[in-house]
Length: 73
Image (cartoon, rainbow, N blue to C red; front, side, top):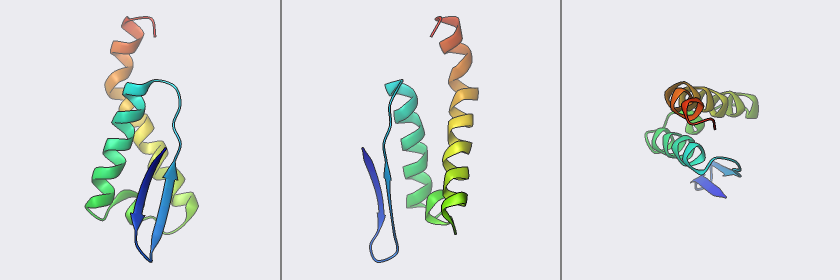
């Protein structure tokens, strides 16, 4: 469970499962963007927030996918 908080403004609770390395990569990218005021920090709706998370999932899949497939994961 991971939390991203802007006191008095927004709170996101992220629950992850599956590959720990992929989950950590995705959460790290989401957290970095959040701290910069982008990504989830700038999402205007929950739909936008879901799209932000999905975009990071796709980015990590593109980066790590070939290596994971090579290892039959």
